[in-house]
Image 1 (cartoon, one colour):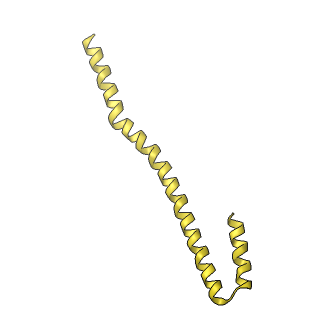
Image 2: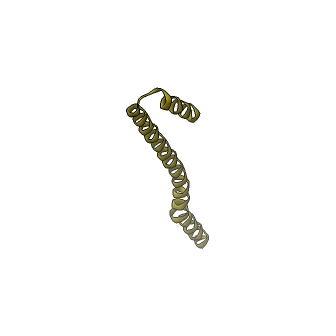
Length: 76
């Protein structure tokens, strides 16, 4: 898809007027920026979901399991 965008941009630079060239270049740049931001947001989201779930498990669930196991040993 990216190659198609570059080819269309290159062809458009030869076919259109100066205003159209500038407009298409700006649109292409904006599209690339939006695509890059979406990819970064997706990767950060995946990273945060994995790390937050591990963090919450380590902070809340693991100590509860440890405490319940300790209390169970103490009662027996």
